[in-house]
Amino acid sequence: IHKNKTYPSALHLLEAMKFADKPDIVERIRLALDANEVYRLSSQYQEHVRADWGRMFLDVLDDVLYLKFKQNPTIRHLLLNTGIADLIFADSNEYWGEGPNGEGENHLGRALCRVRERLHREG
Image 1 (cartoon, rainbow, N blue to C red):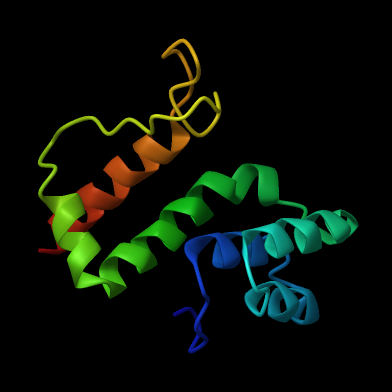
Image 2: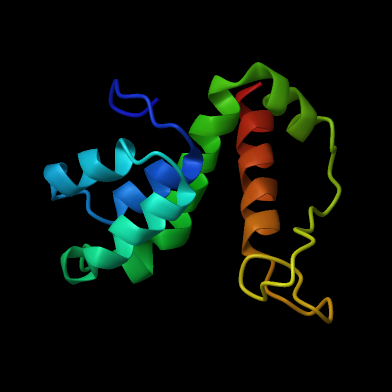
């Protein structure tokens, strides 16, 4: 839930946030039936992506994941129970995960660690 609207997934919200100043595009993405449609819509409107997206992307990712884990007690408990372990997204994608050789940037794993720290601070 973001701004009193329910999004089917964190992906829906994250992609919608690219177009924060275009409410009609945000709503189309929010109502997309699945991830494939979300990506199709997002790519269709690339010329309308907010100018600061490249700079703000990881902060927005953290906020979206924070909402997801704060609003769902079951997965929040699972995340908090990882303690202080490094979280690795075991995926061949070198940006989101560890990549095929374990040398990827692991942005999703690192974002989850930041969210976990934030949830710990809040109690």
